[in-house]
Image (cartoon, rainbow, N blue to C red):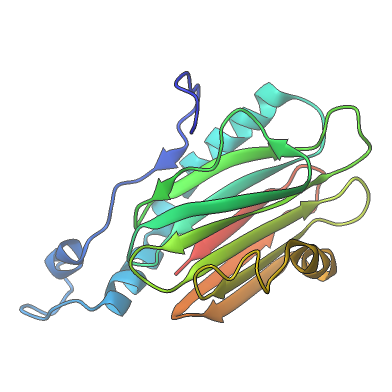
Length: 208
């Protein structure tokens, strides 16, 4: 669990619901919103708090100081709450604040992952979130290496896929081969990801 003395906001935005979709002035009067409608509506609002989320994680980086790190930002537009399942570090560790236990639909979550102090290694890790009440786990991976270009890799699969048949060593291999952008469709959901080109990039994950 995250410590109680958090200096930064790590969750931005409030939950977006079907009632909010149906209350929108441009929404057809009397029409009921579907899960897909809610996801689409939520994704269109992703920019509302994105700048605040990036500012907060940049503040974490400034306090942390020099050294390779990854500034992770996650937006949930799945239409449901996503819940933290597990994480895996191939190189480095979370700085101060762990990944959030849950991210409501319409919220941004941020955290900083840093390299191991004193080691000539990068920030390479992943988190897995589960879409609540659905058979879908989402793998979000990032590689900000000591040398070379940063990369991101994502997959949407059935729940409990990791680390089973999708072993951590295999996921590391996929991440090392990946580029600065990636996307995945699976188990009824979609993920897109991108990362910057510096030694401490912002890794951006959009879940839909």
